[in-house]
Amino acid sequence: MARRTASVRFILATLVIDALGFGLVVPIVPELVLHLSGLTASGASIWVGALLTGFAVMQFACAPLLGALSDRFGRRPVLLLSLTGICVNYLLLAWAPSLVWLFIGRLIAGATAANASTATAYIADVTPPKLRSSRFGLIGAMFGIGFILGPALGGVLGAYGLRLPFMIATALAGCNVLYGLFVLPESLPVERRRKINWGHANPLGSLRVVTADGNLWRLAVSWGCMWFALGALQTTFVLANQLRFGWDTRHNGLALALAGLGSAVVQGLLVHRIVPRLGERRSALIGSALAFCAYLLIAFAPFGWVVLLGIMVQSAGAISNPAVQGIVSAAVPADRQGETQGALSSVQGLTAIVSPIVAGWVFSHFTGPAAPILLPGAPFVASALAYGVSIWAVAGVRPPPALARAEAAATLVARPEEAGGT
Image (tube, rainbow, N blue to C red; front, side):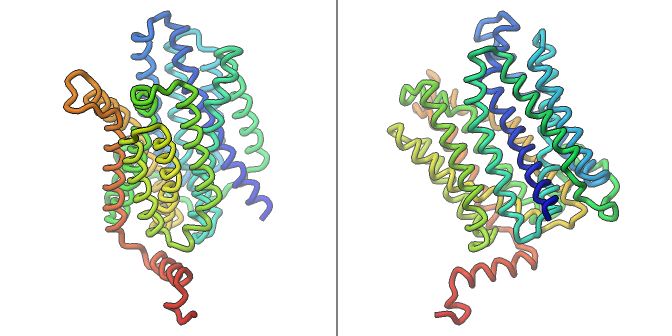
């Protein structure tokens, strides 16, 4: 039991480092591009966009492959290999002499960041089904912590040198590799491993894993809508608030830190209390409805404090993510957890490619000189609509028998009078 607890801690630490590295890049890479290229901000923005796109494309391409490899050879070797790749990425970012090497580093980062699917499958392996949603909530909390600490750490350390944050990140990732070598046991027994289905181990082929089943297809749609909404927020949040309220970097940074903190608190502390009582399907619906309202608040906020209120409501809606993952996990057998989680990561990666393009176009269309109406919050209306689609998708899911019984039990716990209670 102690060894299993230590292995879960390792997985959570891995996810924190993943998110921390992504957050480190946000404030540092644009300055590093300017430094290496000598370009103006306008010219450098093309390279920054290419770096973000390259990261997202590689994550989309590699997530199902890593998931399938973990189903075939076990979770441990895949996790350790990907963590080693993360170290290489940070070293390249720390020492890159040119933009080409910087781009190679971001491609490696995208490929290795796809280890989230394997980490999620590991959690599913070592966690009883009734506890998986709460553990998946911890995964979200770890990402939240990383997204809070990453930009702050990058900004502070970057003041002493643009390369210093990546050196620190290299050391953290290296320590995690050593920790895993000594602590991390294999979670997937040999008898539960399966041969690689190469048709499912590519990003488009892996989508067939979720499109072949009506329930999984709907859940994949819901999952993609959630990440589409978040991608739109990350792309245009700063620009919209600058235009509407004159917020500077400090204001936007604090607001984004509040978003990360709220998500970490909800998914780390509240999910394991809320989801068992409401049931996973009901939790997903309620969380999506809260997020729908939150994005409308942010979109039409007349004052800055309304944006902060929207962020708090959006954080409460974060219960939908682990709830959907819990339904997906309950719908597939043990030997397909890695493959299925990899398919979800592919959906997530695909939306990471598409959502910045869509959000940027919508923002430009509703803030440019030819805008039909001036609405800087228009991308967040698109995010709200995405959550409306998520509600529709989850509402049509037919839970598997085990999950249906669990939801019925949760209903009786919430309303004991239906079971003859007083």
